[in-house]
Every structure is written in C-alpha cells, then in structure tokens.
Length: 509
Ligand code: FAD
Ligand code: DLZ
Ligand code: SF4
Image 1 (cartoon, rainbow, N blue to C red):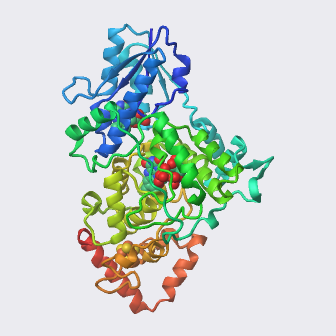
Image 2 (cartoon, rainbow, N blue to C red):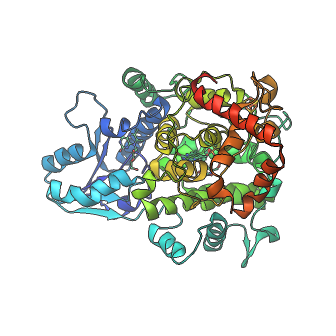
Image 3 (tube, rainbow, N blue to C red):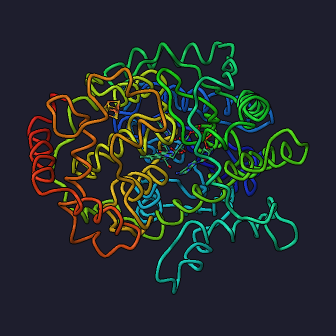
C-alpha cells in the first residue's frame, strides 16, 4: 500500500501522481497544517480558499472510490508539518512508499527530495508536474547558451509548441504580440458586468468559521470572501469571464480605476495556481471565443500570452535559479517596507485603493501590483526580501514560484535585469494616464517639488539618478537620462531634495 500525498496547490484530478496510484490498494493523504498555513501570514481568504478547495477535492476523490485520509486544521495538533502527518499516516498503514508530484515551491520540494526518504525510512517518489506546459528540464534547455532570456522569444516557442493562435508556423493575424493595442484608459464605457457569485455550502461555511477563529490576526478581511472553491464553480468563473470580460481584456489590460478591482481581468489565477483549472484549458476557452468571433484577436492573444508566456516563463526562471535567486538585491536596497503596506493608511490615492482591494479581496490586478505598490517600492528603494514576503502573504494566488520572479525580478529589478531588460519605474504621470486616481488625491500629479507634489514624481528621478551607473548604458533608458540632463541644475537639485525629504518621512505619506 502506497500513500499519495496531494498538496493544497495540486487539486487536479489528472495530477501526475494520481495517474500512477491505484484506488483499489493505495491511499490518498491530504493535510491542513500550521506550517503551510503560516510560513508567511497568508491572507485569511487565501487560507479559506485552499482549505475549502482541499476539502471539496477530497470529497470528490472519495466519491470516485479513493480512500482518503484528510487531516483537518487543528492548532493543538501534534502534527503541525506535512512531514509529521505523512509520518503518522505511513506508520498507521505500514505504507511501502510515498508518491508525490513536484511541488510548486522550492522550500518544500527541497525538503521532500533531500530529507523525507531518510526521515520516513521508505521510498519517496516524485513525478513531474505536467500541468505546466514547459517542464523544468525543457526550460533549462531553452535558456542554455542564451546571453539574455526574454519572455517574448520563450512565448513564441510556447505558441509553436501548443499550436495556440497559429496558422501553420505563422502567428494568427501576422504578429506574435498585440500589446501595443492593449493600453487604453477606461472611462466607464464599456460598462462592467456584474461579478459572478457562488452559493456557500456547509464545507465553505465551516472553513470560513475556522479561518475567522484561527487566522484573523493575519492581514486581510475574510467577510468579503467571494472565491470559487470547487472545480465546477471555477469552470463557471472561467465561462463567465470569457463571455463578459474577455472581449475587452486586451484593450483595458493596463487600465486602473478607483473602487474597481476586477475591471476586465479574469480573477482566475488562484484557481489555475491551486489546480482547479488547467492553464491549457483556460487558453483553449479563450481561443474558442476568438474562433467564434466573440472576442477580438488582441484580447485572446493578450490573455493567452499571460498564461503560456509570462506564467510559464517566471516558473522556468524560478526553478533555474533557486535558491540563490531569493536573496538577490542587485540595487542594494536597504529601506524597510513602509507602514501603509500593512494598514493601508496613506494619502496617496492610488496606493490607498490598491491596499484596500488587496485587504478586501486578496487580489489586485497586475498593473496595481506592478505600477502602483510595486513601482513605489522600487523607486523608494525598499528591501526586496520584505517586498517579496508582503506579496507572498497578501494575494490569494501567491505561491513562491510565481510571486518571487514577479516581485524580485519584474518589480524590484533585484536580479539586475535577468528577467526583464528595463526596470518598471514610472512617475505619477503614468498612473495619471492609466487611471482616474489622481483627480481625487491629496497630492498633485502635475508638480514635483511642492509640499503637496505627487511622491512618485520626485522619487522616480531620485531612483534614476541614484542608479545612474547601473542604467546609464541601457539603450532603453537613454532618453530618460537625457530628459533629466536637460532640466536646469536648480530644478534637478530641488527634485532630489524633495525626494530626500519624502524618503526620510516615508511612513507619513
Ligand atoms: P489576468 O489579468 O486575467 O491574467 C490572466 C492570467 O495570466 C492570470 O490568471 C495568470 O495566471 C496569468 N498571468 C498574468 N500575468 C502574469 C505574470 N506576470 N506572471 C504569472 N502569471 C501571470 N501571479 C500569480 O499568479 N501569483 C502571484 O503570486 C503573483 N504575484 C505577483 C507579484 C507582483 C509584484 C506582480 C507585478 C505580479 C504578480 N503576479 C502573480 C502576476 C499577475 O499580477 C497575476 O497573475 C494577475 O494579476 C492575476 O489576476 P487575474 O487572474 O485576474 O489575471
Ligand atoms: C497555501 C497553502 C496553505 C495556506 N495551506 C496548506 C496546507 O495546509 N496544506 C497543503 O498541503 N498546502 C497548503 N497550501 C499550499 C502549499 O503551500 C503548497 O502546496 C506548497 O507550498 C507547495 O507548493
Ligand atoms: Fe498616485 Fe500621485 Fe496620482 Fe496621487 S497624484 S493618485 S500619489 S500618482
């Protein structure tokens, strides 16, 4: 008798390890444990989503005839780690082996592959997680010998591999990428569809009660929990997105609007990451909508690129470079994360809205993460490890393998430009162009050196100047340095002084 361990982000019926196990003689083990639920202070909604989805998945497996041992969360339990639960189950049933599928996170995979077999005294087998389109080995092969890794070229290979939006060996429509069409500001038209809502069953209710009792000291509200917790519901969320939002996804992909956290985004990442939805089936749904003339090419391509492009690319980068990647700090940042990342209380309207949606929904869309809270952390020089811990804690979709490259690489440029060629630093002007935040803000986006000037404006130039040595030679940044040099020296100094003042009063902004 073997034990198949299914983790909280492996809730997929076609999972590799489930395919090798035999329901007539093997057992499945799933466990809610303190070690996983609190290695960072996960948002209560993330814990509730995982626990409830795990319980529903266990029930589905039982209905299919599997013998499932399910360890419910108990703060007093002597089994507070996955290893201790596995050990106790293996002893109880005299298991001959433990069967696993590759973990998403290095932390746990490292422990399983290096220590578990010895600690348990029985073989621990680990199967490749083929829910991903590109395996770790395939990515390593792709990266080998390249001077620079660029998502765009990787993405084209994934298009060729999957055949998504391909006409023979040519990209559909003639171009690989329609990003240039995806930069519209949203002014209320087209109107937003109603969000999808799900009825709560007894499992959801019990989990929400448990999480409220045990994890309310973690940052974030649980009362606004709206997530799907079964595959069936996640499929409904996918269909709802494709029907109502995908048509506009491309055009408004970079837009932001106060009190509108979803806009035309899918909110599917938590389901894809925990296994309720498969990345390929999500892309196929978008492709079908395009083939049915329900959505334009820039929407389908933009959406598919995020999944078979960015999502697979960051995973490849993660596994190629862990564990050292997590400690990179190539810009030498030393500043602590400002207070408002934890309490949301700031006069900066864009930041305040991003924090509110984060705490209320365990979600913020990509541009809020990248160009508001991320951009601020970048230009203010916050320690990358602190920023990464924050992003890992606060989002329902956050797992180290996807959060870390996005935060440390894409946002903080702490890998020195390994993941992306140019830092995503921007002044308030970018936020003003893409949102309606600035008109309701305490600060003025039009000025840089007054007492009420937008903090992003002077911090942006301070960032550019303090990292002149790193970026001066970057051809994509030549224009930026030229614009600063064109300012008279009095203005330059006033901007840098204002930024210095803001940095020394950072918690008060
Ligand atoms: P949509 O805008 O609808 O996009 C569709 C899908 O594309 C997403 O569901 C997701 O699966 C995928 N996707 C889009 N962009 C990325 C990306 N850059 N990397 C990987 N997948 C992408 N995404 C996570 O899944 N988990 C994280 O922990 C995470 N942390 C991030 C941290 C920072 C600082 C930044 C800038 C981005 C992060 N992202 C993360 C990427 C992206 O912001 C989210 O995937 C996206 O906001 C999820 O919302 P959605 O499902 O509505 O996405
Ligand atoms: C995110 C999460 C949480 C909050 N809790 C659990 C848990 O109790 N049990 C479990 O198996 N998985 C959990 N997860 C997901 C894990 O963190 C994830 O499986 C590992 O990090 C490996 O990627
Ligand atoms: Fe954000 Fe600056 Fe605009 Fe205020 S003025 S909303 S701080 S960009």
